[in-house]
Image (cartoon, rainbow, N blue to C red; front, side, top):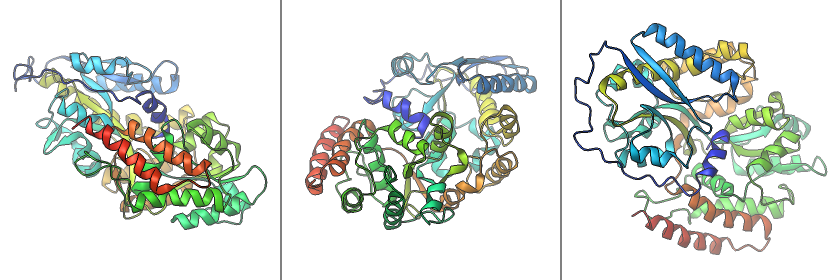
Length: 456
């Protein structure tokens, strides 16, 4: 979960519990649709930036105007809501088929929506999106069930190691060569903690579901899994899961590099990083943006690398995108795909209009979203980011360099409930020197299996 999404995800802690909508053969649009391919069509599109975010909203509105000039037969009716997914209404809208023609969705909900038949099959139309073939396979697969496609991505990211470059320098560490292994993290954390009272080498969550979330991130990086391949049983009570907790226990109690204040949640580490006293934490690259914007940090002080030991393995990933109302006609689907191609997938346009973002004073240069990898559109986007950068792009180089070796791995089913269970284990090793890791994982496994069994 990226930082901005993290707050929303916590609101979804109980899960959305999507209810299957009735989508019989009568609901599927016929091949011809109700209007000719060139006839006028109006589509509703979700997740317009709210009025409280005037810069991004004005950019969206300008893009709508430009798009409608290019396609005068298409009218876009933007729908704003903050957050874009309201857990109090999203389930009901899906069940009733009243969501927008082109509706916003988190990666973690896509497969539930597909199985509930609450999104249109767009397979026969998606070939018209020129860049679709260049999207990373692991990203595009999020919106597929076999060979059938149900949507397109807007954002993609995976977790990394966020670190304070200034503290690295002060501690005699090379900020351009951040740790790649957990043993290197331990060594660096000790040096940073040794700078004096109040300095914390490495910070970690252990409350409010955030501890379990970061447990998953560290587990994936070591090659472990949260659940079995079929999603029916827990898989984290493993050598990799034990290594996650053992490492934290040693850093906390043997190294004294994690500080005495524990039971930290999302805002706690962000505030610590912004204060300039925290050396390292797990987080996606947009942590740096949030620390800069909301917690008095400065972009130039921070860098991001891959999660230690994730190269050649996996990294906890996430993102969002758009799917289509199952009642949408072929013309609406075609129009929606044209809009998504224009606004979400074209270098230099829409979300990738970095020249405009720089002019508006918005940050440019973060290495996300990563939709294309090393394909031609991906290289063009990277070049544009560098051209219009307002943040030190080189500070993200270690993160970017590792991406070609890392597989994106999504959150497990019943993620929030599993994270809550693992908060107990995370908090125990960080608050009790005598914590029994084998028992903690065994107890968590038993509880997790009961949670997972509810969906089988």
